[in-house]
Length: 117
Image (cartoon, rainbow, N blue to C red):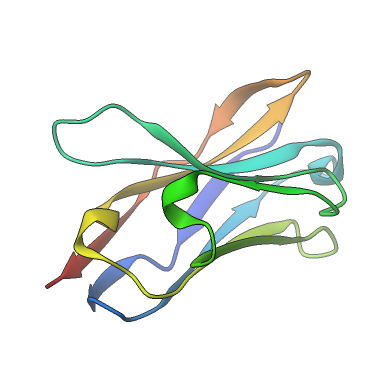
């Protein structure tokens, strides 16, 4: 089982960019589909983006399409979330997660993203 550590969060003005990273331990990273989720204060955790094991397929929630890009580097055991044109409503704790068998069963500790208006 992998362990996940996110980084790259912070405070940014609306319209700015951030790149989140999620480093995974273990030698089986390439066997996991990977995803990014977020949870805003008072709201449920929601799906943001996902990538397949080799990075050939990506999925996004509608609200981030055209602004966020998920990618992965299996040689570095890392998945990224490039976030451009950030909006105040993107403010949340962002989590990466690893999926086996269609279920996300391993989660990182989260990284805070705050977008000021």
